[in-house]
Image (cartoon, rainbow, N blue to C red; front, side, top):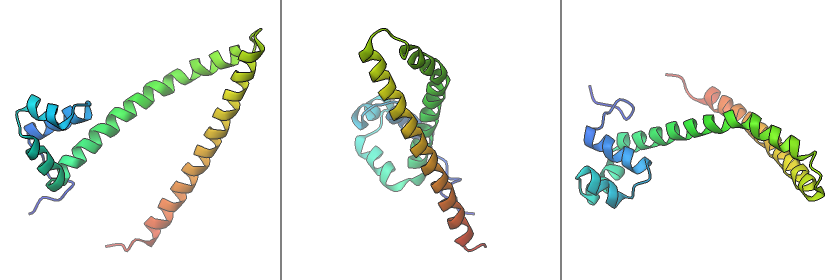
Length: 131
């Protein structure tokens, strides 16, 4: 049975390069650190879907972790902004009010876009031929 893109595995060396790249290393640095040629890394990127999938998955995991940390700080940040609305400084109150309004508008837009994307995904799934 041939390996599919989803089940294909990458080597430990390729995984090390993927980790280095996701960690911010340039291709030159990742190649030096992992003892592979730069051209080899470019070839892996061009010809190994599993290598690119691993990089994408690592970035997604890193981003999710960062978002989790940001989300946990949101309550504290909101409390700080609300407290700033009580400042004696008119400019601080005005800027805080502006920031809160802008954040509320962006949150509303994102919520609406998220709902639209979910609806479009549902439509696409319904139109796919089932095997």
